[in-house]
Image (cartoon, rainbow, N blue to C red; front, side, top):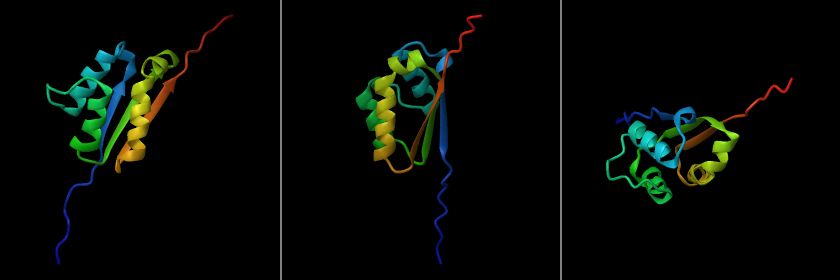
Length: 105
């Protein structure tokens, strides 16, 4: 009898938005953490292509400390990640929103 001994451990990537100000910052951090090739195109099409075809699954990507303002700035990236979660078996996307709290006393 032969058993499949392939490792099914999930690769987990966390992108901390505390240090991200621009879309370029996001793609640089993603490229570094996922060890993407230098020729990776820093755009939504390249992001979709790499997750839907080039990266081994299972994969979990978490966006951490996304402020309300950054949620607006990075809306198209967030929507692409949500779309990929529906399309790609084994891909999980988590979004951690940090809400600003103001003390007006």
